[in-house]
Amino acid sequence: MPAPSLDPLDLYDVRSLLSEEERMVQDTVGRFVDEKVLPIIGDCFDQSRFPVELIPDIAGLGLLGATIPEEYGGAGMNGVSYGLICQELERGDSGLRSFASVQSSLCMYPIFAYGSEEQKREYLPRMSAGEVIGCFGLTEPHGGSDPANMKTHAKKAGDDWVINGAKMWITNGNLAHIAVVWAQTDDGIRGFVVPTTTPGFKAQEIHKKMSLRASVTSALFFDDVRVPASAMLPGVKGLKGPLGCLNQARYGITWGPIGAAQACLKEALAYTAERVLFGRPLAANQSIQVKLADMARRITTAQLLSLQLGRLKDAGRLRPTQVSLAKWNNCRMAIDVARQCRDILGGAGITTEHSALRHALNLESVITYEGTQTVHELVVGRELTGINAF
Image (cartoon, rainbow, N blue to C red; front, side, top):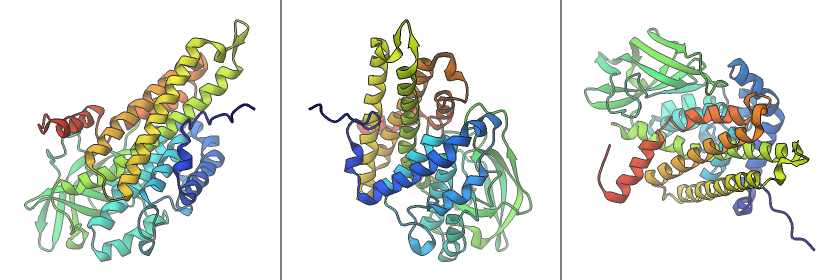
């Protein structure tokens, strides 16, 4: 009797290593992606439109602030479950996962970790419900990989703070009701929760993008934006505040590209089985099988990396260097897989009728934001040598 065939998208049966609750989370988000996201996301990318109509469903499934404790409106999930959420959402589109990542890891997390009890009670339940959308203001037009070179500043004015400056490449900027903004003060870098209706605040959407087209990306401008003292996040000072948020988001990003790569491989497997050239299916060619096998190998490696990373996170043993290694590996894996699948699809691969090129274009952003590949390589190099080469 022949042995049961392996799942081509999970050759090492990583799913069997998940708990029942983790599998339920993956299945629930997977159904949502299959039923609600995949039928529309190609058109959304083509039209450069974020599908805001999906926000109530995303919130209703508990995907916003999934790891936030239930007392603050979150779902209280573990880190692996959050990773699986990111994986399934990015199987749909990186823009959708970016939306959830920013809301959960870059906005809700700092309010939970660094905020006052009043800030937590005011914002977190409504953010979990999708009623309040956030954006994260760290990157600046001149800064990029060097957040310490921050020009945005906040000055004391009586009991208030007055913020001036600009932020760039801000996901959710024109959707947001609040911005978690990081600014230089006389006491170091501090975070502020700034309602986007505050006078002097302006969000300007960035157009003509070739990547993350089904996502809202903005520039933020602060012109004498006055906020009360209660807007400051009291629990952290210095760069460790925003970098702590980025570490949370980067963790989710290690999982997301796995979903994008799986979507591309699934599409390529179906196409090569059906496409007949020179009297036989493409899948019967050695060159095609070698490419498919290599993609499966790299996806499997990424799955195991992220699962172990999640177990370390849930055990309280996660180190930033470990996140950097997985973010570097998994983003590089996914963009290479997407490009290879586009090549296998031939001319058909250049349209949004197929997902490979859409994912490849999106992954150009994913491999860049929250630490470029080179930055993460240097983080690992520093860990290995003890020498900072930045």
